[in-house]
Image 1: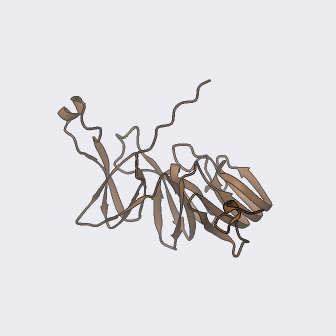
Image 2: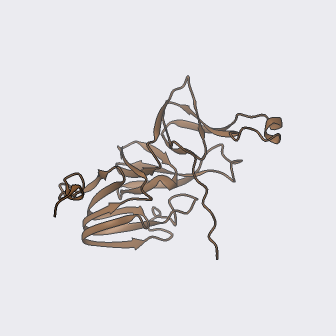
Image 3: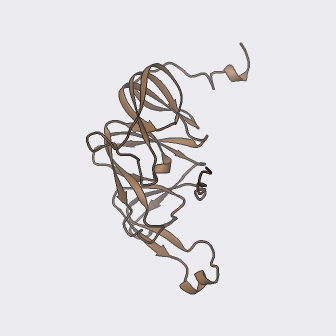
Length: 225
C-alpha cells in the first residue's frame, strides 16, 4: 500500500518507554504499564492488554465524580499496552510537573494524566459572583498532565509589576503562587446600557504564567429529551 497516508508522518512507531508522549498535534499517546487516568470517552485507539473503567465518587479520596465542578468524568486505564487519546480534534500539549509544582487547570482542558499526580477541586478565590463561582482542578505531585485546547494557547508571563487580566471563558490554567480575584472593567452604568461584552475578567497577580485559549469557550447547549 502506497500514498501519503502511509508515510512516516502518519504511521505510529513502536513504544520506546512507558508514559505519555505527543503523537501529533491532535493526539497524545500513552504507553501504559500499570495505571493512568483519562477523560472518559477520549480514547480513540489502543493495542495490548488494557482495561477501561469509569470512575465514580472515588477511591482513596483522589478520584471524584468529576475533575471539576463542570462534571468531567474520569476513567482509569490499567494493564500493559498503548492507548491514544484525543478530544474534538483540539490541539494537545503536555505539562511536566515536578515535586513541589502546582498547576491549576480548567476541567474542560484535561485530557489525561499520570497516576502519580493528585488533584483537588477548588473554587477559584474571588470568583463567587461569576456564575456561582469558578471551579478548577489543582494538580500536584510529579508526573505528566495532558491538556487539550482549541487552537494554540497563549502563555502569558505574570509579574508582580504587571498583573494579567483573563476572560473567564478563555482561561485554561495558571501556575502556582498566582493570586486570583475578579476585575470589573465596566461601570455599572455602562453594563446597564449594554456594555462591551467584556464586563468581568479574572485578575492574576504574582509571578508565574497564565495559559489562555485563543477564543472564548462555546457554551454547551442543553440536551433535548
